[in-house]
Amino acid sequence: MNWQWLSDNSADIRSWFLAHLYLAGVSTVLGLVLSLPLGMIAYRFRWTYPPLINLAGILYTIPSIALFVLLPGLIGTSFLSPLNVIIALTLYTLALLVRVVADALRAVPEDVRLSAQAMGYRPLASLLRVQLPMAIPVIGAGLRVAAVSNVSLVAVGTLIGVQQLGQLFTRGLALSNYGAFYTPIWAGIVLSIVIAVAFDLLILLGIRLASPWQRVSR
Amino acid sequence: MNVFSGVWDWLTDGAHWTGESGIPTRVLEHLEYTALTLLAAIIIAVPLGAWIGHIGRGAGIVGMLANSLRALPSFGVLILLTVWALDRAWGTGGLLAATVVTLLILAIPPILTNTYAGVRAVDPAVRDAARGMGMSPMTQLLRVELPNALPLIMAGIRSAYLQVVATAVIAPYISLGGLGTYVYYGLSQQDYPQMTAGAVLIALLAIAGDLLLAGIARLIVSPGLQIPRRRAWYRRRPNVSPAAATTAAVEPASTDLDSEPNDPDTAGDDRRAAAR
Image (tube, rainbow over all chains, first blue to last red; front, side, top):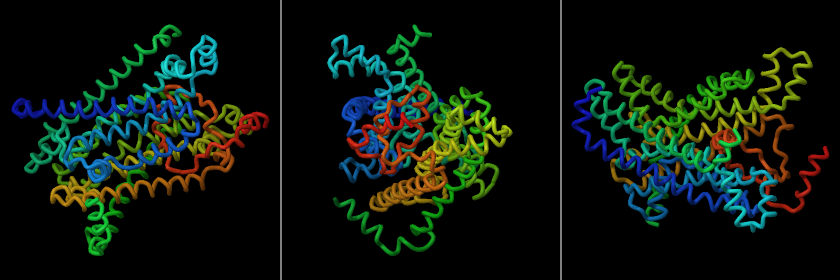
């Protein structure tokens, strides 16, 4: 590890780190926020389940780099805009979570739904205030997968020139022309893992706080 | 839609279909990286997953391993391995190895977790019957558990394929080929039609391969395990646990367009199935 290089470039590294955090974080949160209503629709109106899930499946099949590059032509963003990365990763998160949300809602025990109904909850209130909270552990598990893969996918944005931790990898490759120079590469990998682990722990904490009954039953 | 007519012109230009950097060559290169990786991943992950599923221990470790591998940035790993391979002067073979190892990190987790989950999910009665027929543990695994787990294993392979095809795009960054070259050079030459055409080709290759694998799955999975065409599967209440959600997330949400339309006729299917 060449600490001198790291401290010389600390300003760049800090801004790449923050940009990475921002790109991965915003797309994960947006994906979750959009997937909840869509997942609820897929659950509540069953005829929408197959088309929604198939659409999500097709979307998920499109490689990230392809989507980064295709979005400008489709929606008119600039070719090098970080917005392409955010929109693409939001769509992936959404595609992954719609199914998880719908399946998680369906997995809530029938007794619970009937109890809510008997207590006077209308269908929508029961969905929002009883079934959705009950589904949090499962949705959270899906969200962890999405968040962690988003952190890794953001780095692919380097190929279209978006500034984030991936820059450390290209920097490392360029500096290795005359003999291996691993410092930037390791720094990029470690910082990327730090973000992934931080997201993972944050989601785990969120699940724990949002589902207190799981602690009681244990 | 200026961009797309440019893309169409680029794709239909005969000059782009021949030679060293022609589309057929690039597709073959892309498939070479993908196939090598998938083959290696299957050789590593299926036996390991089957064994862990068979003895029924080590699931926690597998889950943790799979999740932590997912946190590794593939782009960074590729560059790390490349610099290392160049440092040893391994030449093009070293670059190919770096690419395959990087892609393996993506391909192993879905295959491993799905094989494990598939073997674990075999009906205990079926397992008992196999033992009752005097099968040795190895025969049970090979003749009963693995065939029963095949639908899930194939789902894992499809998911791995999608990730590998998508990520093999980074190969030109270390001066290898594949369809990523169009994106990479298109970007550096500001040639957006070329870049977008590359993206379209990658998406088409991903979808075509996924459909092919779905077709293979239909052929090799025992007919008794195929999802009946007219079952209202979305009416059933799946028993989803957080662990299963992770596995389900690993399964491709599937591009087979054979999900049944909502059909009032199938409403009774569950009861009929229960009566059987």
